[in-house]
Image 1 (cartoon, rainbow, N blue to C red):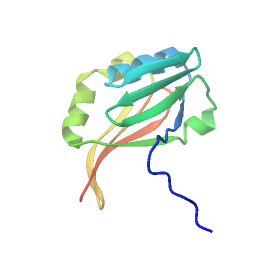
Image 2 (tube, helix red, strand yellow):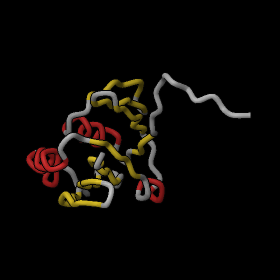
Image 3 (cartoon, rainbow, N blue to C red):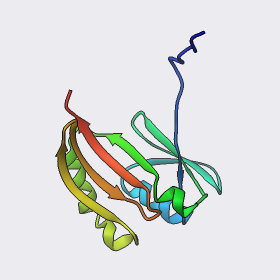
Image 4 (cartoon, rainbow, N blue to C red):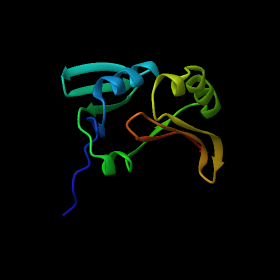
Length: 124
């Protein structure tokens, strides 16, 4: 028996936040729109992409949590992020310059919680 693949709907990751209000501010600053559900859960969206930010933190989990967002221009996105001066506003922020990978191009950013974001563009 084959499972039916859902053709409509949304799939969202639950992203951890060590300091919920700081992480909320961080995501708003990098261009996500926030919809708050309560004092422990928000949805952040940018275009068709969205995720839950939860007021929940386990260090081992957060330090191994990764997200990927495909962007139109990796270098433009990187310079946009660098121009926000995030490293001086939020503790723990780390950037990696854009690099070419066999599958495309990517830059990486570690959030104040320790979540590793990949902003990439696939080669066709």
